[in-house]
Image 1 (cartoon, helix red, strand yellow):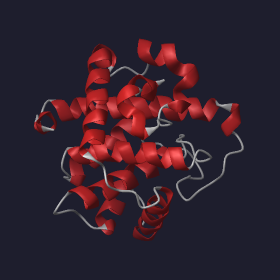
Image 2 (cartoon, one colour):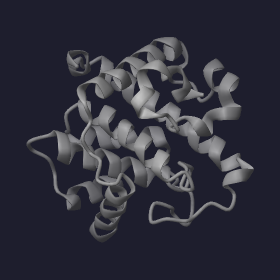
Image 3 (spheres, helix red, strand yellow):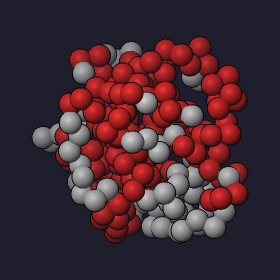
Image 4 (cartoon, helix red, strand yellow):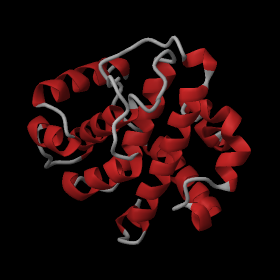
Length: 205
């Protein structure tokens, strides 16, 4: 999508995705049904001290991948949590899922991309851990990396519409959107991709 090439749009997209993932992670942290969730390689022993916003900004600054990779990474996170509902995105896993999804998206979408060692440095983890995360993420996706054009544009349209809705509050820790939908944020990525165009509104509820 040509609009993604706009230098003014990408910072807004990064901010929105950060805000969205922050709300999802916080909601899942508090959800009783996820208190006994399965622990995976994506879970840290403690919550990272770096915020999701700062972490994604760092990835955006140093990864140098094409803008479409961030939309594709969002699609991958959606697929991952649909296939593995016992591994919800929370404060202990969101950072590793982010760096892994962006790296995998860059490898699939871009002709030129950095290796795992580089992404490990960007993400603040070891190369060995980055390798394990990549393998687990690929198996979690069922190696389903292809994103059809209609799926890509559906996600783009959703993100653009939501960014317009929350733009005045996009840099705030809380917004009316977050407050109004806080009770159901854990469903953010539990969307049936095949019917995404008919159910886009459910992505952020």
